[in-house]
Image 1 (tube, helix red, strand yellow):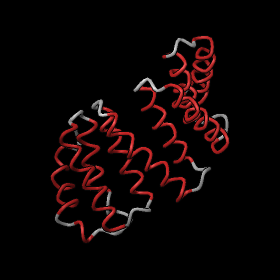
Image 2 (tube, rainbow, N blue to C red):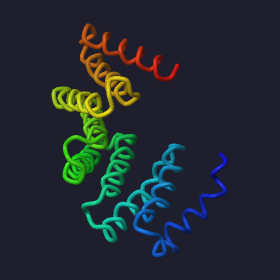
Image 3 (cartoon, rainbow, N blue to C red):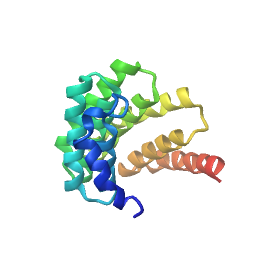
Length: 188
């Protein structure tokens, strides 16, 4: 991987040189190192970096900051990837509440948080809790981004997958078809 030789330098920026970074850039090095390891499936190596991003971010930026919500989502994704569902739920709920507080109810990041929480619930077989969140994320994305957007296709696909998991094939199929048509239109 082309980035591998750079990782020690980014780790150094995330630790030793952290105090010299601006508030806007402060969390980025630890987040990026965590993403590097996470993308390779090296979850144990990613976790301390994402914990550092969250904890040092809270220390410097306070708990009510968009970067904190992003860090919470990262940790939750890590936990979910490892099947640590009970650990993933609280940070996802906190991220959703924080994004609603900071960005308002109608924001693409709120739709992302709704989607992430719904996906977690689906993974746990908590379908009745997942469905309204998927529906809300889809409606919000259509409202904010328009009918023809990749995130709308993503939400259509996720809702269809939820229905498919429940054997609700007649409801899943048109959503899958709509997502496919939209992706062909947008991506070729």
